[in-house]
Length: 110
Length: 110
Image (spheres, rainbow over the protein chains, first blue to last red):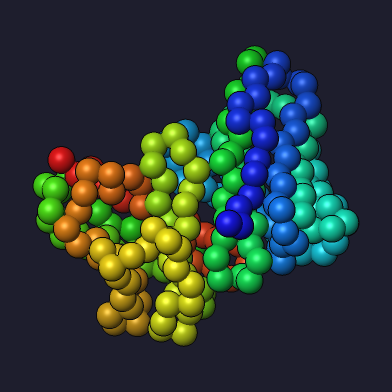
């Protein structure tokens, strides 16, 4: 069935290092959203990507949507301890049902 | 900033009992969702609701589950005849662009 795969499952980095998480769908997505969930918290919306090849930046975060609208990535430059959490992508094919990736848990060592 | 409110924050119930989880979405949002997250796992879509009716539901959302918007503001998820495997965090979300999630209800079935 339709689903969104996300890798890696875990990433441990030293503060100041970069971090990237990747999501992939076997079929074309209508849009993809990214969320951050802190331990014990709820997912918080970061951004939505809609257009083929779209790139959006939020300070140290860069989000990309592939040309075929089947993959997406989130890159964090120079991680900080405040970046700790689990990052989820959520893709949709019809705007009614969202498929969340399994998440990448980021740990940042000071 | 507008919030999605969920009650109760914790619910412990005996196997076989019925539970009702409550949510107050953001008032001008049109799309409402229920998700569940088993501890340490990904966020799983249950159902979406638009224009006072279900717009999409997942394979998980079988006859054991139902949703209602009884009074135009509250949005409820009813789980009948609960099972041990229903233990999870249940999140309500409403959406204009990205999802705004509530803080969740932790359901424990014993």
